[in-house]
Length: 570
Image 1 (tube, rainbow, N blue to C red):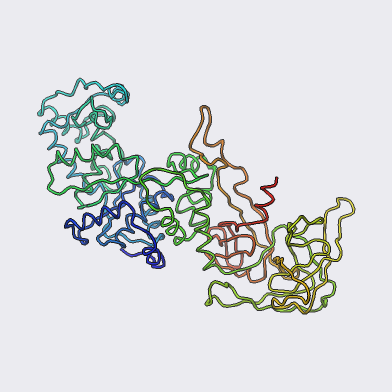
Image 2 (image 1 turned 120 degrees about the vertical axis):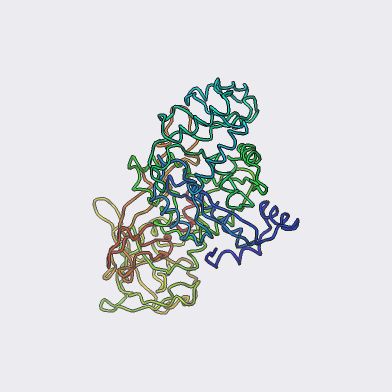
């Protein structure tokens, strides 16, 4: 297994071991060789991976990097009606994009023959039977958390009859739903999953790998533990919702009678504010065309995050930050956004762009002069090089950087106030031009101090404010999509009666706009990321950009301390 190297080593020595790592170290101390460690990531290929899956990916593949052993990618492809080859391919692409490589590519369908033979073994042992109850009847007989279940009237069929019926199921002699193979455990068990769970059902769907070779398919519970055992998995890591399935996982392995069996350990899944993780709901958003597709940058899918411009390093560092816990909790969205900012701050070249513009005219700057200012592309990266920005008499600035009546602690433009134009000179507002009808400010007339170039402070006074700008004569128009969380509810999947999760969609989660950028942005290439200074981080969307016509997606906004102050006062 390989992973991008900037993670992981720098972080590994800075944190304590999580409870899974401690268990692994205990197993090694008791004689398990690090070379024997075997992990797996077992997605079902029925949709695109999301950031919740990324947690499991980083955990399983990361354990190999930290402790040794191997990690397989196994597709639990036991439900052909919902699974497609395109999902198999997209999952592999996502894992590699995150920076990982599997040791062996496996499929549950590789084990269909062995699983069938083991099912026959359980029938012969009297541990499984063919049941004719339909789905509704099975649920009715199962009971509740407070009431035990009732035995199926078909539970006491003979071994010979069960074997004949199971062979007939395999041969396609019955319709879908007519019969199932169920484990014979205990209908009075306090664990509902132990109340004679289904092992096989009839499903006459073409499988994306095995075609029409099979018309009966194992359930996830029957295939999961046995797949682990076949691959020699030593530590089967699952999210917490599978804790109740652990007794069944162990029961199946015990009944098969294998010498070496894996052990299941559960960890908390990832829940994040303003984020929907349910595959069912995500699929509905896509199928009803509420979003652009599985790669919509507002979705938490890996494809969506990639198209938004989030880096794999930011995702891996985020997973390191939140760690691995035994109990579910909800992570604040700002924690993820901070991981994005922290990484992009180190690697993203700086550029300037203005969104809601107002013209600033420097009345004492020569009209025919265009001065080139040489600036660093990224002050955090000495290798990033430099670029030239034309500075001239007329520039565009953000309208929000001006106040006619400046509030206390205001450090931007106001009548009589002096600020520095980023990388350029200090200017003072001398006159404000307004539209005579609307009263809207249309132009700021300023004077500059020629002795304040290259960051020099003016004599006898301190200029604390710095604002960004773009040259008016050669600024380039750039289309920008401002993406923000799709939902305005912190917990979009927690619904009250009569409420749809669609009610929580923010209609302003996608805003198409246009900015004016410094000239170099016209040459931005697909896949490049930039920090628009004082605005945020932006990505040249490969799906919407052409040569010489970049389209920018907002990855994350910068923290705005002044906006935070104003919000707290409102």
